[in-house]
Image 1 (spheres, rainbow, N blue to C red):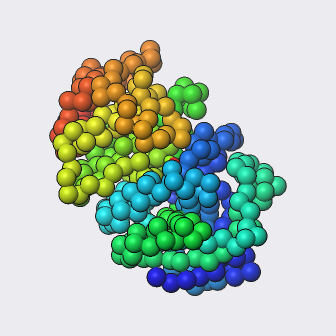
Image 2 (cartoon, rainbow, N blue to C red):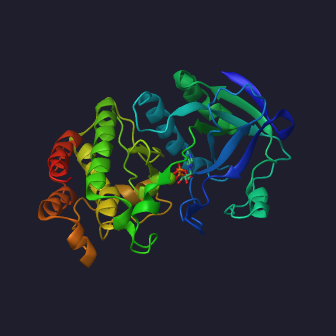
Length: 336
Ligand SMILES: Nc1ncnc2c1ncn2[C@@H]1O[C@H](COP(=O)(O)OP(=O)(O)O)[C@@H](O)[C@H]1O
Ligand SMILES: [Mg+2]
């Protein structure tokens, strides 16, 4: 563990929020996810030149007014990201730690930084304090110190690679793209994206993690490398000792009804957990079976085999990510 001072004078500070907006072309939208969640996310700037990071990372910090709600979520995310270290397609935790804000610190209100003025008002540059930084390998120590630090006014945080790619919601949502989603990705790409996610889930499941919060806002698309990258594991569970088959199956049904139905058809499956600040209990109490819904133009986009596959997935017929991947691979082989 090392200690540092967070303050603009020190060249190490929190800049604009990353959790309050999305841009598509010329249109900027405030996203519905940030408010009410367990964390706030800011860009972390290090002007000292001694930074260990390749580019400015994201700083995900526990909300000071949501400690008891947020604590189990942060615990899970630390364990999962430490446990899944090295798997491709995740947003790696670069460091974890605790921030003890100076008494003069004020957290900014949640404004989308859509103008220079709003960006300044929304930035957390006034937040200064002590940082205790832990490497991913030191996550065990961090977890041990959690209770004592929390009661002493420290706020847990994760420093994550900053995602700069296109959010999949922006590319795939029927409303957001005004119906143009089918032009953004071919079905071959849609199937390939699903395969990549299955690969990540298969590895996570094998090590003992589930994801569960499969809204498209949590997936990014690297157009250049044609790769999917995920964020936000805090609703997932870390249970390497006793992973139950039903839990894996449930993770796959959540993936199917939210992410996969959304990239196939432009919308989530009817009755699935809405895109928003989802709570663990919303997802835990979600149905175990869903039906597909196809708008007229989607009926031309998907072929019969793809529709049958999606319906099977929504019904919970796949018990492992590898089995789902195999079926997707078969469908992809038939698309040019
Ligand atoms: N590594 C990151 N890079 C860029 N933006 C991020 C990153 N992590 C989070 N965000 C932004 O902040 C939002 C909230 O972060 P998330 O990890 O989903 O937290 P929560 O647990 O509060 O939902 C994300 O939807 C995304 O817009
Ligand atoms: Mg989230």
